[in-house]
Length: 244
Length: 244
DNA sequence: CGGACTATTGAGACTCCTCAACTAACGTGG
DNA sequence: CCACGTTAGTTGAGGAGTCTCAATAGTCCG
Image 1 (cartoon, chains in turn orange, yellow, purple, blue):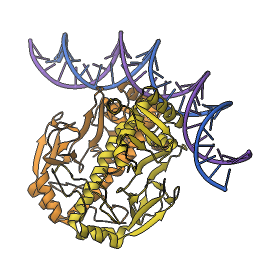
Image 2 (cartoon, chains in turn blue, yellow, green, purple; image 1 turned 180 degrees about the horizontal axis):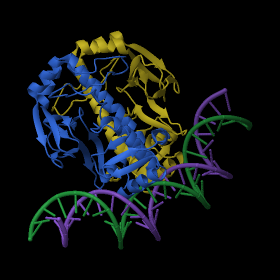
Image 3 (tube, helix red, strand yellow; image 1 turned 120 degrees about the horizontal axis):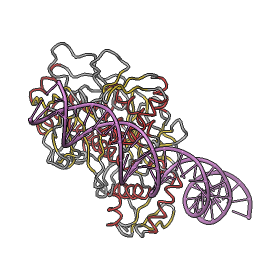
């Protein structure tokens, strides 16, 4: 899915854009962030969008013309299966890129969860830019590689059997991706609904609900309200998450 | 996981190396294959290896210094979980790249399944090369992007409940990746064991076995021997695979 | 031919899914 | 500001499917 959070963007930072992850195959320390210049280049071809919640950005299989970068807020990328089930492929937060396509068509449907700021990059212009700026492209490559790792990890999560364990993994995995606006580091603000979480974890809504209840019973997490989880016992929560 | 098969490598072709997939974000038709020159550049930094079956190439968490490309044969990349279960992250075939790392350490363990020919590319030299050849890097980017799509797809596969459906998906997904040496297009040569398939599909070995029996009962596939499956009714097999 | 490994088959336990009823929260309009 | 309707989430009961354990059969290799 996403990307580690950055150390508070500088003052009036208009576009944190892509925050590439340091390591490709294993090079110890690559430039983690875009240079000012690269950012300018990207901004030059980007359109900035401010959008309300619950807005569909594009539909699965629609012709793909743009790549998106999240500036602020939360987006989900999902696919509806023939059976009527829905699978959320990823939740996207600040700095995440989405709009993956195949044969010129989007693979998923993308929809805003909260109010968001997005940057829209026309594919053809972006391609052009990447072909000419190997350094920038390298950062993008790092980013994509990182997403690949996350996707592999997620496949492992979903392969677990027990619902409580999956939910614990979800909480632990998603925590670093969120901009927790509030100070308390032990609380997790979940912008998405239970039902979205269920679709992400490949569980039924009821199973997620029961799993939440179980985590509370075990005193690992307290769900203060629908969108706020407070971690009571991080150690044991992580232990449960990792007990695959 | 992998990559579409190529149209029979030219005569004495010593290194088909990476076969990049045409589309990044959605550009309609990018150069699908490496140029002769790019191939030479890669070969210049590559070591060619011929290895026996069941050889561990590297262990999870070992320091990562090289990326690998499959020239011929089959490799599996897997992770052993604390519970003792094993999850196969990917099967790799001709043209596939593996050796993904994080923080300079391999994420998975890689092991040969059959006898293989591999190309080993030192990360640092490869990085250097990519930074200077934006076109080549672009092809790599396309490749990684493609793997990402496959990983997302796989996450959907594994999220299915029924074993027979998962196995059907596996067969359908893996078919184009194999070099079926024999002429008959309806047979699938599976180099890996049932147990490997189980680890890939996140099922128990027994469940895979029963699922195989069910596919035979339904007359979709005939398992001629342990490593050979003959597709009897492709239409219905695909239908089952897609009935997620 | 033996031995180790791989695969199949059966029985019972466990977990989640589905269906259904109920409760809580939200937001719209009077 | 409150009532109402709609959506989101909780809880219970029964059924479906896989997992585990265990025993059996088949296969590969020396």
